[in-house]
Length: 227
Ligand code: DHB
Ligand code: MG
Image 1 (cartoon, rainbow, N blue to C red):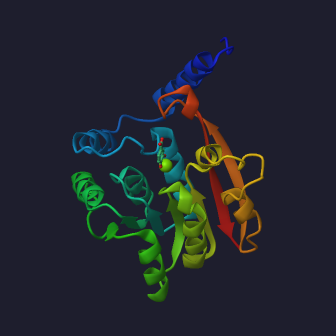
Image 2 (tube, rainbow, N blue to C red):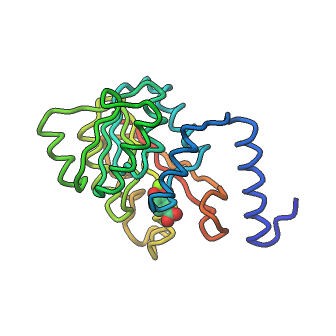
Image 3 (cartoon, protein in one colour):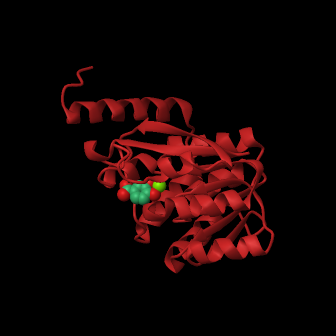
């Protein structure tokens, strides 16, 4: 397969995504409902990809996570993966609209209040409150505004049990959008986590056609374990 232009490379990424999706994932009407109902209700089309969702479910099982903290609910697509993997999810979103649609989506999927606790508010207000309440989590999923990635990460670590993992989405996209960050000339999540003695972390770069164009093909997430 030729890979000479960005479009060729994007088509290759798309073919790989399709191969993996078709062969590894099952038909899933509940997840498909979440996507279509979120779209119908005008939510932005920025959820994790189906393959990434499956990864989150597997990661939850590997970790044996029973309590997940999610920063950024959107339509509840990733939320359902955590619930299905056996976790109770506390999911924060700043948008009442997102939360309404997510409630509808998860109710339709059969995930009730025993499975998901929705919290409305700015994460940087909610997270200190959860800490004051003595809450602790086995896995934290951060998928919210990129400018605050390290502020969220810092709270995530404070709210995580020893051995818990913290996943930060879109770390490579955030690096690419910040001039000087890739070169290390400007602070980024990677430089800040690198100095953080509370965790051991890695970056998992990804190539995917999920974000609809060659310019958004490179992404990657940061995964940390709390020491
Ligand atoms: C975009 C993608 C994301 O996964 C996200 O969390 C936010 C924005 C985007 O493609 O713009
Ligand atoms: Mg994201």
